[in-house]
Structures are given as structure tokens and as C-alpha cells.
Amino acid sequence: MTEIKRDPALDALANDFEHDDFDLVPATVESAPAAHSLHMGRPAEPRGASPLRAVRLPKALDEQLTSYAQQSGESASAIVRAAISEYLQRHPA
Image 1 (tube, one colour):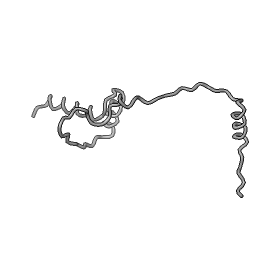
Image 2 (image 1 turned 30 degrees about the vertical axis):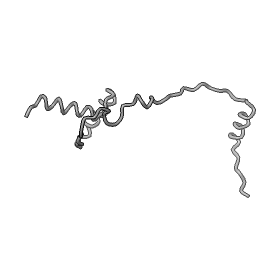
Image 3 (image 1 turned 135 degrees about the horizontal axis):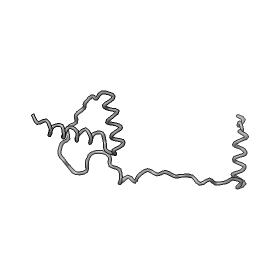
Image 4 (image 1 turned 180 degrees about the horizontal axis):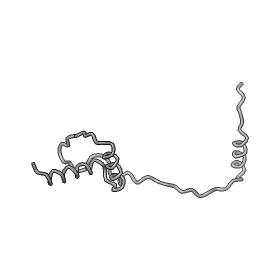
């Protein structure tokens, strides 16, 4: 038979617990937002086919985009869409 190694600190903790000899410390509980309040994925309203475009960004520009998205609470995709739309309005072909 294998001998079980005992940890004296854990044995003392278990003993305190079994004999109600411990103090409860209030803890801060953080919760995630409710699932219905999260805005993830594609837009809810149908807009037809949404083609995917992949672009390469310089590292510094990507870091700026990520930082701006985090600070503004918008997705990087939404920011890129708005930037392209604004650019095309200002620079007609």
C-alpha cells in the first residue's frame, strides 16, 4: 500500500475548518456583463453579403488602432470601416 504524504499546514487548515476556528473575510466579487448586453459578432440587422477584406498594417499603426479601439469601446473593424468610408468621401475617384 502507498503511504500518503501529509502536509502539516494543510492538516492544520483542515482542522481549523472542521472545528469552525476560522474567520471569513469579505471578498470582492466581479461578474461579467450579461450575455444580452455584449455586442459581439455580426450586426443583428440583415445587410446582405458582407465581403471580407484582409489588410496588412505596419506594427505601429496596428498598435494605435488597438489602443484606440480599447479606449473608445468600438471594434477595430468598425473603426477601419468608418476610416475607409470617410477617406472615400473626401477623395472621390
